[in-house]
Length: 220
Image 1 (spheres, rainbow, N blue to C red):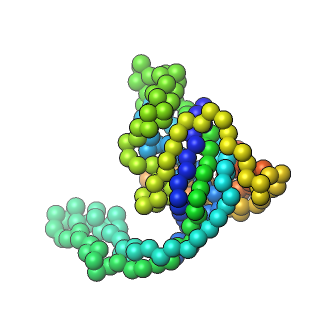
Image 2 (tube, one colour):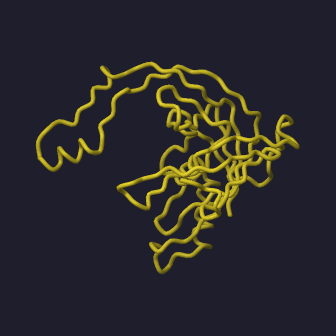
Image 3 (tube, rainbow, N blue to C red):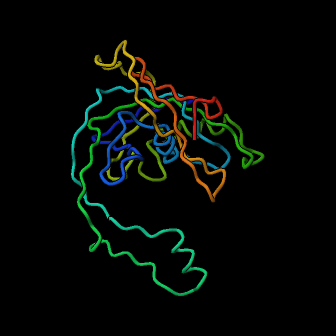
């Protein structure tokens, strides 16, 4: 198991039901936590599982207007061009920029507790002890494959190995807060039908306990 402390100025864990302007969840989602850890260390021989997320700073929101590209190139269009061998896949961002409002979190700090499971892609010489040592060493040295972030790449995350849990914010102590249905992760079992998975999030004394995927609490 690892315990990773992360912090930053802003975070945006977008609610999927918001179609135009982005609105963040109150707390980091398990999929965002997994992505952040994978930015530090990823290997086909292991799969990260998020156990719990400690909220170590008061939950504060702020508004920000951001420039976003309003158009996208679909996978179907790309496939068509590849099959035909002709056509254009061109997106002029200067013409497609649109300013949109976002409701995001500010001054965030979390401690992520996670473990990994070995996969069938692990090599003969791979073992849990080896991976544990590599991960801890990379965290302590501040190494990463690409900049860890809080939901969006423009909101970078700082990180360090957590020896001692920071204190729970006073406003979250001895309280239970229903966070509603939260995004758990994406199910890539069927590449032709990628499905989002959700769970009912509850913050207890500043801790979000993440259910196991096969627990029955995670729904598609």
